[in-house]
Length: 148
Image (cartoon, rainbow, N blue to C red; front, side, top):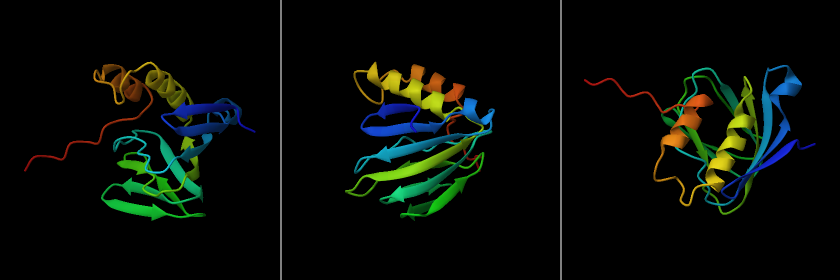
């Protein structure tokens, strides 16, 4: 049963199990992305672990220095600190389950949807509200490589 359905520029995130139902342990989201959809830039989490499990279609996941192409029934775990991003490079929809622990992904996606709806362009010209939102929900930019 879907608790909440969230529109994200053509992708849809359906919260199946929220953090309140798990005693603050994890969140489960079914995420459907249209063809040629890019979810967002590469990022990392300080404390959040995620896992992506493809139900239908093909998902491209950038994970640290690797690019993974996952088909139906395939999964990948993203530990805290790993730089990652995902996208749909295909001409078909991709549907996946996303598990995030600790929870918070569902609140991030709801707040992100509201920010998208209120912005005349995406990404917004003034990124300060987006940067604040990301920082609040453990959606952090990749660490800078040390200078040689």
